[in-house]
Image 1 (cartoon, rainbow, N blue to C red):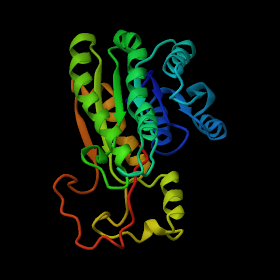
Image 2 (image 1 turned 120 degrees about the vertical axis):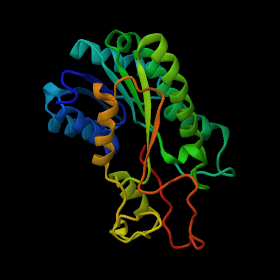
Image 3 (image 1 turned 30 degrees about the vertical axis):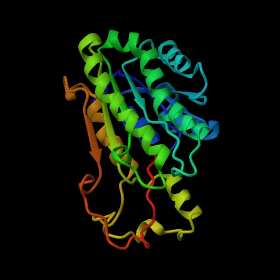
Image 4 (image 1 turned 135 degrees about the vertical axis):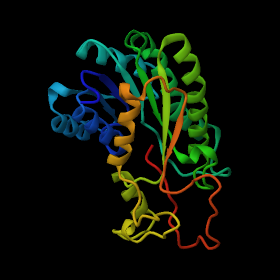
Length: 269
């Protein structure tokens, strides 16, 4: 097993990409701290993983003591901490005109500042284990979409943080920091969003090839499979790296001339 005996905190893991990562980590031999806002969903995840393999923490990451609470729970329950996966994020539509200071601050607090504070709180334990951090970003970090302004800003900042800490923490503490940037992923929340936008129940089965050359978008379990590599010892000394997980070259790809029939894509991370 690639993650045998590793203890991993995974934020935002009661659903979507985070839940898929939690399941794959346990399959690979790890024990995990499941985190989210939905206690009922969290209990279902714990039941699936097995109580001996996981513990649940329900708390908004915007709360001041959230990082310390997660780290304390991991260490008290399992005796150590090997890795942190910063997956939780608010995905909210906004543009320049609909984004005010309060809205932007809220997204930055959860999507960027909370990951930083969790890394800082976990660092003494990660240093002991020569551990690793995996930040889950988004391809929108590079520029974003008109309707994902604040979200994209927060993910761009997260990517800069990964590059910076991936160098400094690796040199000073022996802790690696890397990031994956998922593209369009078919999560439960994404299915709901698109239906709320007025699309059909089976919208994901009829996507333009410009966004789904394979005939479908990514599945959470495929993101989880990629996450395991960065959490496992097999990724060696690699640090400060950002890997895009999308089915086409994201940067520099020419969009179609007529985008009126293409559903707006939003990620779950």
